[in-house]
Image (tube, rainbow, N blue to C red; front, side):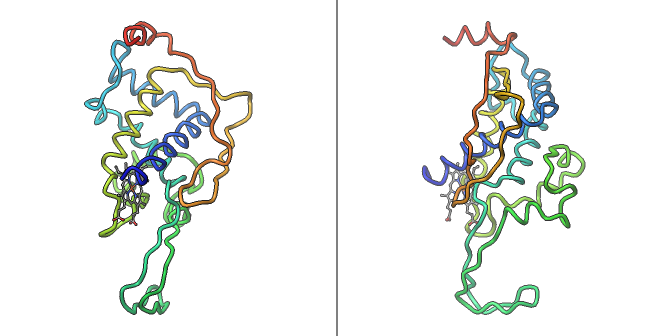
Length: 203
Ligand code: HEM
């Protein structure tokens, strides 16, 4: 549980922050949603999460573009045929989630970061496969979503974030079991001016 739940979660937060730093309008919208629903007098907490729908869309869009586990192995239990291909029993198959999530036939502007795509049609989220499927689906999915949303909401509520320099954050992906960033995110942050009294109370 610890191994499966640690990197996957932290990687998601890092990709989401990188995408938000590259898309200031989305960062602004996520902040505005938190300010409207939580304000500045207290830290965001778990009971606020159902009211942060835009942030949920940002996280879905992050998982779509950068699934923490990009390739999932399966083995055929019996002979079968998939799309006309004969698959003998015992064949190892690799499900390429990264490619499925960027399929132009399935997603409009598949390579662009557009959290709003999940607003248009709630069913869009059903096309995501970042937690796998079937009997081996991720048992930590529910907990992961809560942890990632709460961590991101706290970071956005409490701090103002800026990229270092003018250049966009480099989104190159590291090959591997867990898809991390080739260049780990470095960014500048300072306490959000309206949050300083609340943050001071926590010291
Ligand atoms: C961003 C967060 C996470 C992602 C994207 C993720 C994704 C996945 C994926 C794709 C699988 C394989 C599913 C399959 O083969 O169909 C998996 C398995 C698993 N995950 Fe997660 N996971 C995350 C967080 C967590 C957390 C927080 C926990 C535990 C608290 C956890 C526990 C597990 C375990 C125990 C398995 C193995 C299940 C099995 O083999 O039967 N995961 N996860």
